[in-house]
Image (cartoon, rainbow, N blue to C red; front, side, top):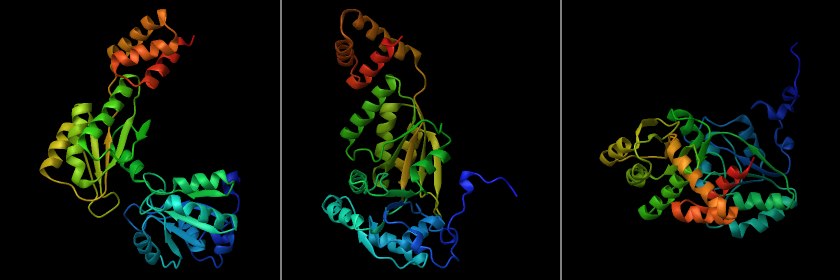
Length: 305
């Protein structure tokens, strides 16, 4: 018999199989965040199904979307909408229910709750109130796109959806480029709507240049596609062949530019000779256009022995 580890600690029979007779009684009171499939309805764990079966209430981004999953797996559960437009108003009543011992599951339309989806206000309120909050991990579109992209998997930075308007989008991308000039090096990830994809890729190409990238579309579904190439090439492709479905964009990290980083350090060293750290950072930030917090952090690093 193999040696047992902490991870091998016996679990109640009701938590480990669909054949178990009484799983509901073992689901504790509190809020559980349940990850759901990002496309293929079979991509759901037995723990997730247990949590949904045992919940007194399933909070859904869209009850119609969640109904498809519940029906597919033969789960009869009481559902209620929790989305961006009603979350703030609903939180106090939901917290009262949790205080009363309610078992509550939170799901989004697809993937892991809170990641570009509603639920943060409720979780924050529950944590502040000292109520139990747990999670059943599972699918996540951004991480799935990352591991399929062929780009460096770590570190990575997930940024949600970019601004919908080009001017704001370019400004946001410009701030990221400034952070890269100050030392940020990570694969960058965004979700995007299909009708904005070509324009977003064009704006990315303007700000980030001939950077390797990938567009992941309809992940885990019948028409899954991961197209890899340079940002200009991807922008040209999707301008000519508009995309459909759920989309995640991945952009590779900035190539090392020793001269650029050295120039920032030299400016900071000169400024620090005659100014306090705070004033030196402010002067260099103004001169370079880099975010003040980013320059200040670099100034702190240079000041350490």
